[in-house]
Image (cartoon, rainbow over all chains, first blue to last red; front, side, top):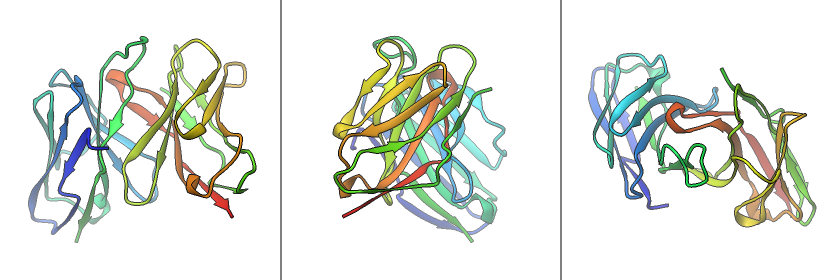
Length: 117
Length: 112
């Protein structure tokens, strides 16, 4: 479980705050992902970074801004959030292509529990 | 577009009995299918995947899944359930540059 780490584990913020979530992977992978897990919806893909380039933005509001400075680190910058953005934010990493062909297995961090007041 | 359905919100099984958690999928192209488990306040843990080859896939903690192309299903199974198997289970499809599409999850409750 230490292959993908996320900080902080818990975050409470007001709607006018700016904060950032951090993810680091120690698995030598070349792709990283942000997912949102909320109580009333299935896990939703937010962003995909493939070799540090963003390849997927799943219609995410601009108040969420991702950054991938290198293949081991991924950030999610938050500003002017709404209470409905409260959720568990999960980071994952993988090889884009696995050893047996097809997509590599995604390994997940423990998540950041975000509460927006 | 692809989708994953887990028709049961909750599955209850007595300890020692076999368990099945159902998953059906709809994808265009080759189906790449995964099962993950989530314990309270934890991230998702990978259990097993189907990429190609044998329809019966074996994974972690004694779990296995059967890929059935004609029924577009990928049900998770275990011959003998343990109380410690109680958790939230997710089926997913896709991956790679497109990310994963998840089902809504199934709560598995193993009763002593």
